[in-house]
Length: 336
Image 1 (tube, rainbow, N blue to C red):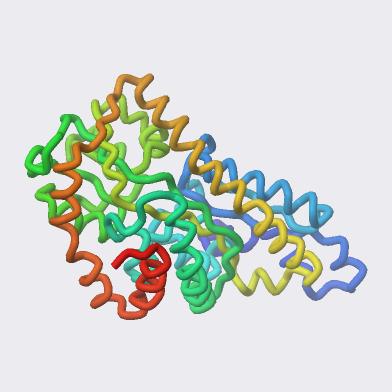
Image 2: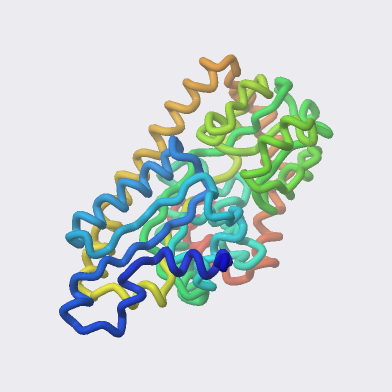
């Protein structure tokens, strides 16, 4: 008899989950094996971070908890499905792209508000105020956040070089989330909301002729095979959030829970540094592949900001709970 995806994944959690009724001495020796779902390929720095975390957890818990990183979407979950998959126990852990979950949790779209964050130092300040909100969302969805890691800043990867906003008009572009979709519409582009797993097919077929994403994803997708320019618009941010299902979390001994939490806290700053390095390395690889980095002229940047300025107010209207943390963030930066 074939097992469905739900049964197969639960079976894959290993002997630890199956032996909860065993004598205490046996339970102490059982290993809890936890598949972690991620859509990113093995070479992506987020996947590298996940594997490092898994190695440290196995070492720190003396092998009692083994995280098995399933890369490249091999468990069958697309990016926008990851939060629900962990919530419903279809997979015990996942590396979740926050801005792809806005259909379920609009608050996760804060980092994607165009030009809200100018650099990674500002992003750290923003996270000081939105991380508690993310924790509440995770709890509501039956999971616990272990760590978060930002993507590098976003670029517009295109076939053509644009040095004015009018040069972007009507270009069909793949976007990852609603904020990107609204931004591209506001500046005159023709956005299509497409998960990462379907992006290369869309480029190959000609369904889109550009992609809004990081330089890292540009390397993952070998964009030099399709596109010629990547524009440093620095328009949005997003982050990966590694979570664990709370029913699974309760099966881990309190001492090992503490070890895992402490490891996550210890490793997270290193993972943030890896984001900056990944952007530098990926930008170099894109140029080596034949693409050209386009710095945005000041008049074009001013026009981009002007055309998208109302999106912050619109976000407040859609997600009223976002206003307080965002305004507190802006106040710390002395921005109105």
